[in-house]
Length: 167
Image (cartoon, helix red, strand yellow):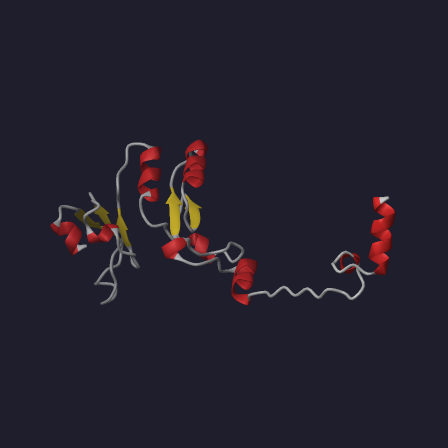
């Protein structure tokens, strides 16, 4: 946040909490006027910090997301179903939450995980079981089956069948 502030961003603490509530607590903080040259624009954030990037069109926002490494999660706010669809169809990310944040991780029946640098797969529920189980398919060819009759060198039975068919 210091780097962002030094490069012209506005840092605003909001909500309740902070150092008065607990010595290591931090109040939720919005960082306004974030630019691409700021560290906060490129680092993974684990804390109540929200860097805010502005855009003029939904296409500009989609291009912004697509120009960077794929995000672990994507949060869309808005009631416009066509714009929601455009964002969902036009971006690649881990989970998406519409009109909220982070609650997708608490849904046991939804897979959770990123794409590319933000993760290697889906966890939770059946997807997590499948991802972490490494199923091994095993097929054993039976001794008697139609395909063994058709492998060269052909046996007497196959020769008779082929002779009959080719007449």
